[in-house]
Image 1 (cartoon, one colour):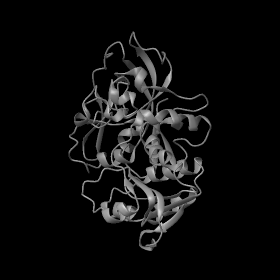
Image 2: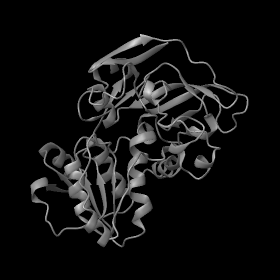
Image 3: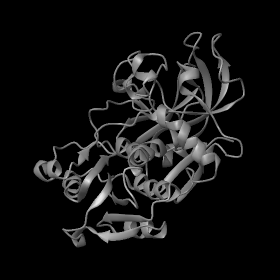
Image 4: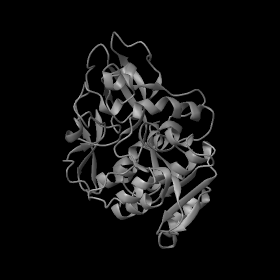
Length: 339
């Protein structure tokens, strides 16, 4: 089978690989149909995370068709289109049962699609075939009326932004949301789209790049130049999409009473935390990846009601075979679809 493989910084090629085998009675073999390029994919392709060794089978935002099922799979069927989470999870361990699916104890920590050997070598979405070890636990059917492309970003970007907002919105009346732009540009835009779908009226977007500020404004956020943010302006919810510890510090410093800040990007540096001000405000900083599978159900429910989708931000839908030249490049959200 063919697999798109990152063999070095900015070097992608289609490689021949053995077809995956059914992992057992709980598993499935799927054929990826649509794969979204996460902002983090672009950083990995550029070689910004040397801790991830090459080669890497790329792609972790995946919609696929079910081709083969283990004998004990009950919730999905042959030919079904399904959305996959980026993380591997079993669905039955205590962590999974408590909806902490990224802390699944049935597999090693940091078990992801699309991030290579360090993440367990589970393969990548840009492949002819992919093994799904826990089919019932991981796969969710694509809702009727939605295309594979519209669901491509569910398993990473959309669940990530959903968890930064939904658990906290009910705490506040007319919540004020700050989204800090930067490396995770498309995630910031998804944050605007989801916040609006959930009824948030006050959304500020902070950045220093004119094109990112313009993109945020076009989606309905209030753009604020980084140098112009007022020291007395405070927010209930801050989403840090910058990957910059200095911007994270700014976001934390602008949290109001009981405010919460969630970074969606792993920084390579340590941040200075305004611990005193945060303590006085009962403010919180939430670190780490989302429990992706646990958030897929409510995200897909909102999408089934046409609240938002993977194409709610500027998006390029590109042919599968063009991925070697286009997968990790550019800043616009890209989704690769198979005929």
